[in-house]
Length: 240
Image (tube, rainbow, N blue to C red; front, side, top):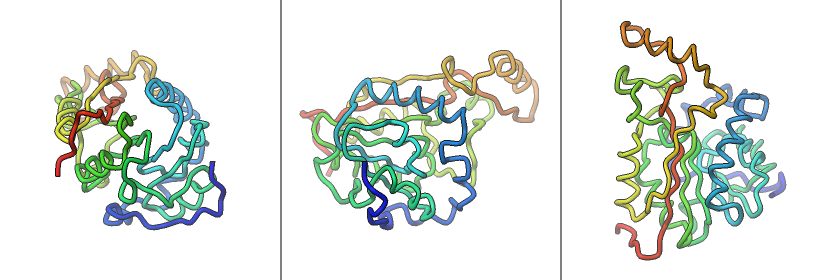
């Protein structure tokens, strides 16, 4: 890991949304939320099925708590819009390289619960393709899925905030975009059953209420969120 004296830099391509993520947003993102820690374990297991070492970039890395949890074997870099969060994150990763500064450098690029917050998601995906080595992976974790039955019913999900959302993907939609940029999707997982946020009886009762009510009852449910892994394979050409 990298030391605290890493230079904290601004993030090209993300500054336009910086003012939406104030310091208070990160209060429970310093490894002090036990449910988040349990979810990190699930997300870490998914990621390490495909890559467990090398150069990693965490896009929207927050305070670096996920990278810290990973105990990664290799160099870790981050991209983050909030300056206070970045000052915490430098304990675990560096900000001197990003998907915009490197080419054929990263072994894995992680978007954990962040793609919906980006005002330029397709530019980010395109830059990620260029920044990855051949055979490198782009991994989406804790990502909303508009193909889910709850979203199709209510056009909302329990962890969405309209003031912070620009692009809310579905599994098919995100897969299509990735493949058009040259990636090959290798796995999509919907981790409801293993989720620490699952309350089976409550969730299904709330879903029944959503069926008969105009009100939106927030609850975890099947396919609300997804994990997706895609590879930059050698016979794919990046879109110019």
